[in-house]
Image (cartoon, rainbow, N blue to C red):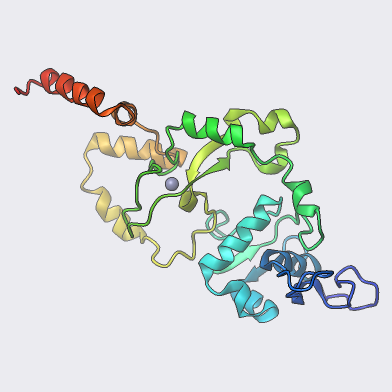
Length: 266
Ligand SMILES: [Zn+2]
């Protein structure tokens, strides 16, 4: 769909500049006009629902800063998704190419003031976030890593966040927003829905080769994790989580108890 360039059109800021070309917020002296606002405006006015686009296309249209690299672009897209935009990538839609995205639904018109707040109405409250994290033992429900852990692949500290199990647009009431079963703890990497552009994706043949070393029981366990897309904490994991939160002397008592139980002396 060609961009409408007639006068008074909504695709332009009061000074006539297309929203996606703004760098300073209208009406301010130097307040930066956010990249996700430019991205939302460009997608809204130059793409129709169902259209696809690539990172290269974004760079050509919006300048290289909007999509410096895949991770950078993913952060912008995440902001849009939080505001009701649906933009699947190959990860959730196998018909897309690795660097391709589909505009499935247009969400908040982020370039306009106040739109973000309107669409963030049903974001979880601080209280809900705390309850959900507690319920999940402050661990990512998907990969099982906790707030004190680091990622095995690069040693970076795990950051936890809250993800929704039901699509955000179906949370149409405060009751739904406050329903704990609608949320789960996720780490920032698992919460990242666009993983196709991670620098070093896994290869199927290598993953399959690694499976050969698993015992039958391990394979069964893995099957259930992969099917569900969740790694539940085992009873041992949960007991460890709780023991870890004990005071030093209480933890020593647990060690003594376990040593006796498994028949260790001293
Ligand atoms: Zn995770």
